[in-house]
Amino acid sequence: MGSDVTIGLRTAEGEVIAARSYSHVIDRILAEADFVTPNEVEFRGLVEEYRSSKGYGPLPAAPFGSGILFADFQTRTIYSFQSIAFFPAFTKDSAVKTLFKSPERFDIYVPHFSMVLEFAPRPTGDYRMPDIVERNIERAADQEGLWKAAGIETVPGTYANWNDGKEEVLARAIVPRGDFLALMVDLPGWSMITCNPRNKAEVSAIYDAFAAGIPLGADDVKAWEDFIAELE
Image (cartoon, rainbow, N blue to C red; front, top):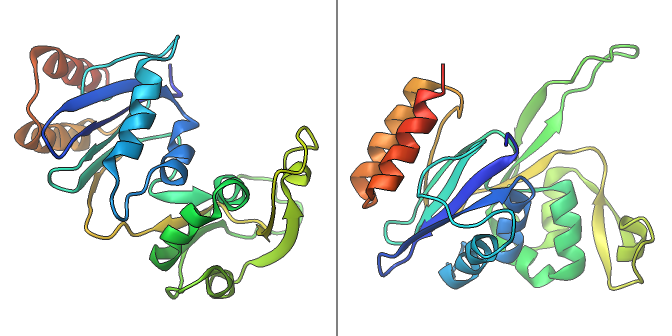
């Protein structure tokens, strides 16, 4: 259950829907849903996919498993606390996949990349998990400018090469090479409300803010209370 997470949204018209999903969904969100325009239909389609998927299905509008990622399209607020992925961000894997499969979607976000997350170097023979460091970067107008600002080398690639040769060559692209974790995005017009998903006081504070802005039913309230009660 630790890799499961709630994803959900309130539409501009006020409908609230949520679903149980799995960790990899976080990497799919920016690749498949435009949060710059924004286009709520695309994100709703992702939520509906999991609502109708065997083994997942509908959930109350409340955290589950590792937490929640909920987008309120009425107020342009994202509630995100979960312990499984960076958001809003493109990891190296999701960036490469998007560059091959839908480069035009990646281009939407290029002017909004603001930071690189990467591993701090360790001395030779030090095998401890390296620290993660943040590095701010200058905004860029295009992909070439982005990679230059981020100091990331790029190479020509084919999708077959990056997919262990399991598929035919579907596309060719200039893709990043090197050891970085994620490119962080500033989503224009959106407010981010986030916290440590295992901190009871912080989660309780987000619940108060969530309940003040999102109409909750009895099942939603109970699910929030149950999640918070399990935190130490």
